Image 1 (cartoon, one colour):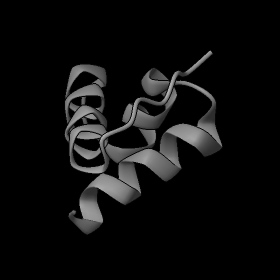
Image 2 (tube, one colour):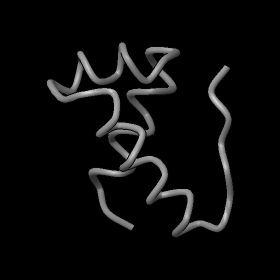
Image 3 (cartoon, one colour):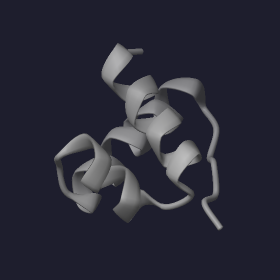
Image 4 (cartoon, one colour):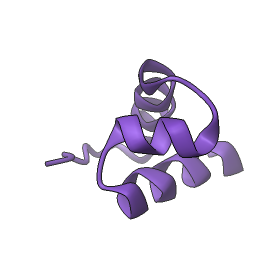
Length: 50
C-alpha cells in the first residue's frame, strides 16, 4: 500500500466524485480511478462511488 493510494482515496471520498478528486489532485480522472483500483486490489475489496 502506498501513501498516494490513500491520498487519492481520501480525496475521492471528500469530493464525492473521481472527477472532482482529480481536479483537486492536479491529475486526470482515469489516473485517480487506476490508483484507487490498485488500492482495492491490494486490500482485496471494492469500493463503489455513487
